[in-house]
Image (cartoon, rainbow, N blue to C red; front, side, top):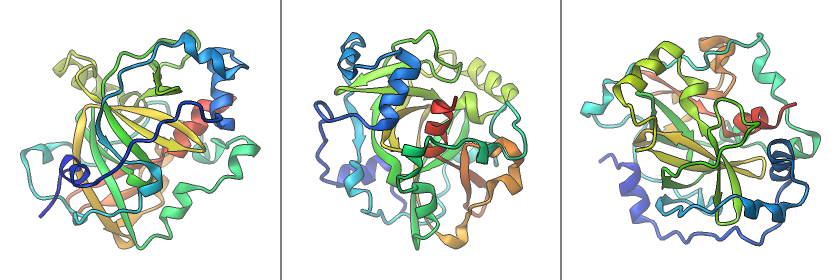
Length: 271
């Protein structure tokens, strides 16, 4: 029986970690310096905290717990979404993914994207963004919270509507549709849903020692895939527009882009 993300998480006994009071990571410090001009992390108090009531939780320390969902989800009316979403309206040069290089102090950290290729089974969380389905490795997921209005930053790129203060951590909120969906399809989805994501969810993920929030429409299902169901060369199929994908999941009916949280963090921190 295929389990939904909600069903899987509700069966677990995960305790939420309180991030307040912990030293911030080099990536968090670099983000605060770049976008808020802050050298003193204590100044984040200027960003009002959000309620951040979790829908589901998944602390990073226990991400090896694996659900029993097969690689292909059971048929449902929601599966009418278009296959193989073509990411990124902004075409990059051929070596776009390689160009997103982390700072030296960040590159020394273990790479989640690389470790996935050595796992016998990879568990992924499926979600909708502007009507298309993507997946993110559960190893990167901490929790899912309901949409909170981000605190807007004047220097933020167009795909970052702002930040939220979640238990003492300043998290950039990333509108994935702006990065991964073609402009025409994104506009069509926005016309069909005038709420502009405000009825959606935020997936709290972590990479490079930094937490970020991925703004999505809703959760889809869980996937547990063997390496034969995974293609780690997304660029060969989608070209340079796959710069924020670390691979593709083959479900039998379609290919789903695997979102790289590491590459999104690198994009945020690149000069």
